[in-house]
Image (cartoon, rainbow over all chains, first blue to last red; front, side, top):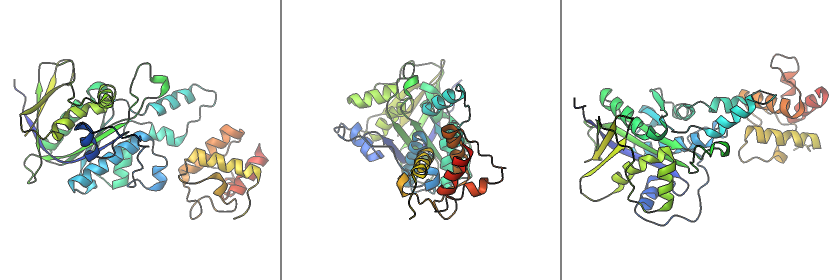
Length: 271
Length: 87
């Protein structure tokens, strides 16, 4: 049986990483511009009230900054969007803290760190900061986080006929977990998507689920070592293959096929 | 601003670290300024974090229901004195 094709329009994009602090800067790197000499410190999204911001760990600040940029780029009120947030790794610094504290004699946990340790903490900070009352999902799918999230958001966008915010974010892994999880790069990327029927300009993203699996993510066109490492090690940065497709100005047919599960894959194309 | 004693400075340093106070040095906390509300602008979650940090650093347990807890949390000076008395 052929699955239904999903379609949406891309209305806004946000991005944040160690060497880019918005979508324009990421596009410049993808186009081959040199990596800046100075590494960015973590973002300080001003949309989060000061008392909450000082409690917000890096994954939260990454997600909120990138989300805010995408809503500004789309020119949409942030609190009107249904959201899907995704991190393949979660906050491993806090996972480490929780495990260490609970294994020690004094097991009292910091209420802030406990509160921040849940996987949907970024969704919580975002919805509180923007006053969003719409649904906000949090997805984790390790190496398949990006494809699962696009599937989830595109289904909601089409089935509910509602604009959506998608935010992909992963922070460097705590030292103690580095033997199993390699990621040492910081990355966040957001999309605001609308149903295909929405009367607005913008590229149309089409997606199909295939019953044949693929094992590997498509190679990036970018030759930067930094981009290659980011793409290989940071689960959320797998979205760079889609970002490259959006950024590319050539008019050739654009299509990529990415892993989705052990038995399936997903093909994305842009029109 | 009133002058901090050595033990008040140590307590201020513990607070700045435990609460991740942005753009604030321990030396800048006035020992007689209100910690909550209009003063330093701390809130109830900060009170829990301070209590936890004090229990780990000084072994002093501060319980929400205890008499004297509200007074202890008024200022850096009262909090430092409370911990000194209960160590």
